[in-house]
Length: 293
Image (cartoon, rainbow, N blue to C red; front, top):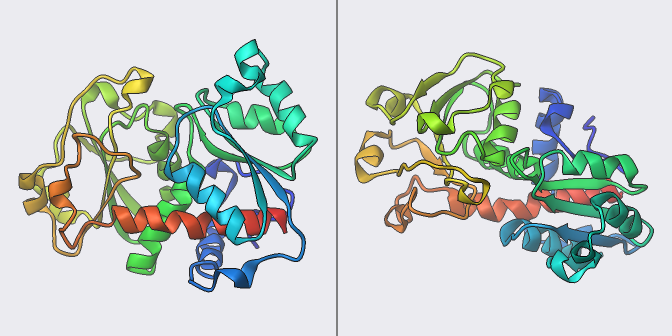
């Protein structure tokens, strides 16, 4: 039985094992349909969307998920207009909101912020991204996209390309993939290598997408340079790279994208990043459905 259940926080993928994740994959599928009203609960809950950083997909999909489930959302997407602008601490903000709502969805610029919030909150905290730390709900939709495509998470080769140092989506995804019989390749500039604490197994590493790596890849996962966090480096997925990939490979990206993945690839049948984005709704409906009960 999944540990994602009523009243629990959702902070890090390191809190779960492979059986938990497989249970989640099956659970998400029950929310992944068009009969949205089927899941409206008998009693409304109030959810706080507390975002200290900009967001399009995560914020709006959580808002939509809560609405489809019959809940109401207290949106705080501009903390500069709250008491944060007066110097209020994260902990005091969390204590305040926890006295009003049933659940807090938190995005913050500092790694570890979600865990710090969970320590003082009387209601569940869902980590919607904490600085250069993790982005566990993104990883669930990444895994679900892969699971829907291949009907498995084992015996796959996943190549992670881009900003591996500051990319929180990568940090969460590596932890989850390491629970499975999955081969991982790391591609990116030397200055943007994966932090040592995330190395749990041996990975093939390269600064470019070589032909041998490309031909063995089932999933190519590209990320942008996190310039807002001081990342320095350049790379891009090119037409030459695309020609190296097998026709059965899929290409993913957590979005937003910049120069690392041009719109020239959008019409390629291997592109899955828009389907990936769309899967965020089912994932977040599932999380709210399980955590709020």
